[in-house]
Length: 408
Image 1 (cartoon, rainbow, N blue to C red):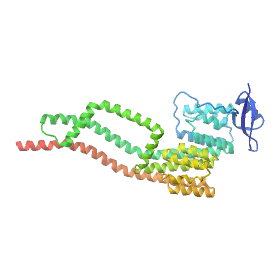
Image 2: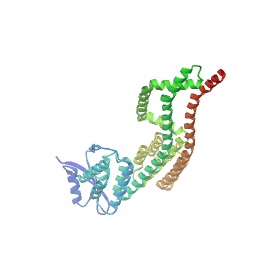
Image 3: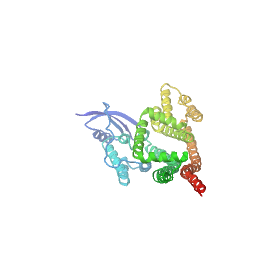
């Protein structure tokens, strides 16, 4: 039985038209619209039937952000050169190294052949193409600037990858040093301290308090080591479950913001994401409320996300976007004032990009300062931890030497 489909198309002059047709499926609607000389933008059942969910493709499901950025850049280049969507996707499917990602792109191509728009097809794969990506592609389709939008997307994703890389590189050294410290301490508690314990037990005498504490800790590790491992694993799973809840994530994010240096780095990173993502969405023509909803999902901190939700609630009441931010100290005064000036001058996206650039530089400086501070601090921790254990082990030796000298 034929179904009524609502459609949006673009004519030869670039004007967006809408209407409805009856057909058995979307492929027939798309073919008919192309025969009429139109380029389909979207085709949906008029009854509002939902699109199918993300397709489950077996195999390795990891798609890196860098791969999505490369796809966006290449896709934009091909479309700008005059290639059709289907031909561009066919080429990208062949040359993509990640086989799973290639199957996803092939699925997108098949959906477009069936009459779906590009944004609809990408939206069926939310694990690879998030709401930011889909919303900007939809805006690019509607505005007739898909290649430019894809270039902006590629730039945005590349900046995200670069920012993550800088933060990870800053944290890699302290994590490595702390792991080394824990391994050394554990090895000494399990293997070295028991040897000294046996030797001191044979010699007799009273051990210094520091040595007694060290031996007690060693006994706990020896007899309860399996329980400690199980407890650590249970703690990790419990923490992940707690953080997966709304209240848990909010509490964790509030605590992180209060940590010296680390909290400042997280705050500046969140401001970078907030400013750059909102600027990109607004400049691409995405509606303000949808843009704010997407920014709240991608900003990466629940405290900042609450501020973004407050902006959206205020916008619904007709308030300026900058007004609700005054009630959220996590947003620096400069961000609030720049947004206010941007709204007054009609250049909000431009000023937000300036804010994003400023905080990108701030993040770089904070990462450099953090690295410079942590290196000597961690060396002191490593030396202090190992040195304290060695001293505790050798303190009884002085008493033994005194006893031997007195006997002589």
